[in-house]
Image (cartoon, rainbow, N blue to C red):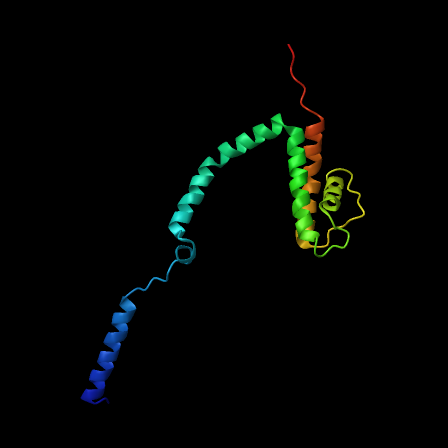
Length: 149
């Protein structure tokens, strides 16, 4: 059995705990704290970008179709730059951007090179080029025939 004084102290303690637990403390939003953009604002922005995605995608694909050679050079050049930055510190055979471009260009065509990817990032870039590269090369070299009537 508790004395009256102990019971009062216990009731006071429980009342304090219940009062504190009833007050919901929301942690600060990480994005808001560091970047000045709340999670809700980020969701709204991503949704806005998703709405416009198909329009941008159509515009990009129209440009690629109208300029297949430039698209091929752009893709291979960008892939070579990414491969160079992924491999330059690790791969002793990638000393210059030209070394990386040589490897990426062969990945897009016959697949032969005396350079091999050593990092996971380099392998991922090479795999992407091996999958997409031949179709881009075909598109840039074999323009669609115009229907003449």
